[in-house]
Amino acid sequence: MIRKAVIPVAGWGTRVLPATKSLPKPMLPVADMPAIYYIVEEAVASGIEHIIFITSRHMRAVEDFFDEQPELKHLLASKQNNAMLDRLNAIETMAKFSFVRQSQPRGLGHAVLMARNAVGHEPFALLLGDDLMWSGADNPPCLRQLMDVYEQRHASVIATMPVPDAEVSRYGIIRGERVGPQLMQVRGLIEKPSLAEAPSNQAVVGRYILSHGIFDLLEHTPPGRGGEIQITDALCALLAHEPVYAYEYHGRRYDTGDTVGWLMTSLDYALRRPEFAPALRAYLRTLDLSGEN
Image 1 (cartoon, rainbow, N blue to C red):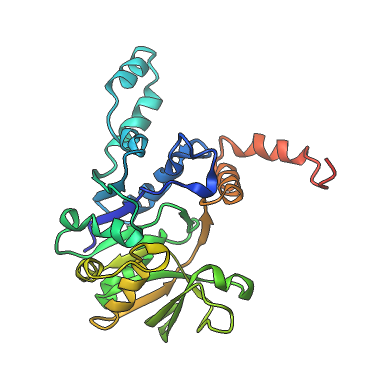
Image 2: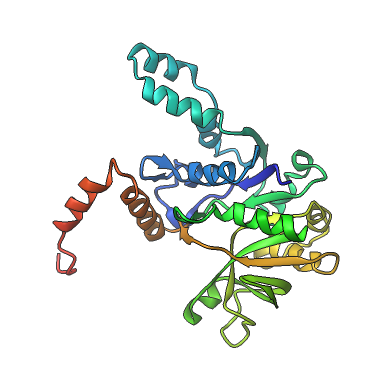
């Protein structure tokens, strides 16, 4: 059973500057909630009980968002805003939250390694903060889909999606063998290959179920590309010790890591909300989209 999830949020968010100069990237609003909320919501809806955030000294806003704020709640109570009070209470109690400080930005692999003591000797979920996953009304959340595969295979699972040829060089690409519908056993991972080098069009996206064995490998993984400890390098090493699977999940990925992606994500999420959608659609119909203005 997967009970714990690790969510690294220590990065600077340089692709979304200057918006992230003073506001942490995970706190950028998507509709009326910070982006990080939707990632936690996915984890909790999948059955996760304990969220472990890997933070840095400029991420205090993330901690504050999931912490209780008595003064604000007292103000809302005095105004009899019970609906908002209930909403804040739901956020603060949706899971157990822990925060582990990464003192230096040494890469995603190092951030995951920082969670070792909090995770312990059990499998865990890893959710990356740039990726929001929308699975629709007819499918379980992306993470739940991976957890179901883990419960069948008892091995680490990576979420993947097919990408067009023109985008292959932007992703980590899976090399593997088909072992079931939407399921591959991973034989290798190639980071940002050229189209000629790519062994498939299955790109790694920001959801993983990992065995605790990944921690020993991360501890001995030397710095790679960019002088950082890469999770991809540790995953390649893990293949020598135990099976790893890649699952092409049902759903859509949103990349909030750059400004255009963040704006598109916020618009789509708002259009799914019945309290926002009618006014937004009416406004969009008034826009001149010819590009002349």
